[in-house]
Length: 470
Image (tube, rainbow, N blue to C red):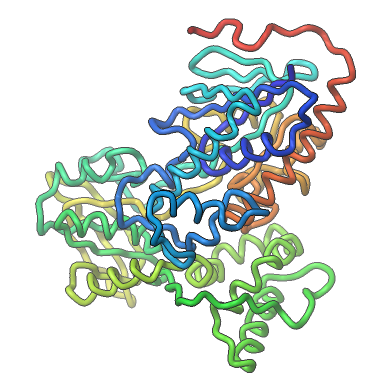
């Protein structure tokens, strides 16, 4: 029996399970062990939300878990509501339910076992890996790190993160309900960050009768989708050969947008047409230029690339018009928790101001720094030399298939990853098309390496489940 561990139960883990079920040779017995400590497995934080206004920012017709069956998610939706259309932006909770059902459909084909616990460590044992969790340990032939994102980093300006009224991660269960319990209707809550996380939090707080002040260095809300979605417009010119500076990349993008305007094509089609080229542009830059991109043009790119659903944008417009949401472009100098209030000092247009708010929510967005994952798993993987952290904190070093590169520079054909942990190599890595492609590629490589390795003898290991409480 070959055993594969899938460490993480969000979208990346679910798509890995799907690909294992589709690609694994039927004549090779397989058992897959998925580790997911969340209350509702196979959804992850992003799709566990129960807020009805937290919508996908991609239409239903583009969210299939199967790359060769574009309508798979749409058919699932129509079994529950026959009026759903491909262009609809449906609640994220629906997509979470879809992922859970899709995993369940695959479970019998791969002998799926779900451990409802967090993985604490992964240890190399000869040709195998020992996965240590709250349930004990499993010795496996291969593992896939499908960890999703790490929690957001604390803004340096937040002086008293332990004070009442500070939410370090708005996606943790009941995080916003705690704000509701410690504030009153009509109170003002400050969010640090104006991206898609900030938008979702603003909608949730507004539904609870709170006013929201959203602050960021750029003061830019995400752009909005238009329907019908445009057909992507690919660049006319090839990516320049050789190493690229951040200025070269920015010039390539600006020229592409100009070409689209000349053709009477909107910027949305031009931005979407760059999607297949993003990893190439990213990989042609040095580490220093990548850092310069992250410090500068990246925020403008994210605003255009990751857009709000039309109905979400309409609600945000109304909140702005009713002055229930205020967006301020500024630098946050300090945020200090005082008795039942927060004193926030900002600088905008060179003028220092002080705001008094009831609570502060960190909406800077998740990270993929391997050392920040809960429970210390990432730090242990780095300390053991099983993985190497990306120099910019963007996941870990891998090859093009998603196989992990260890501290000695060797490619580990028994340890793979996908999604957020591959951001250092690909930059664009967590949208559904990228996750589907990465899951397919990683499992294809895993099948080839593990099935081939299975023909070579190795010392007997304890059977699956030894030492696990039942």
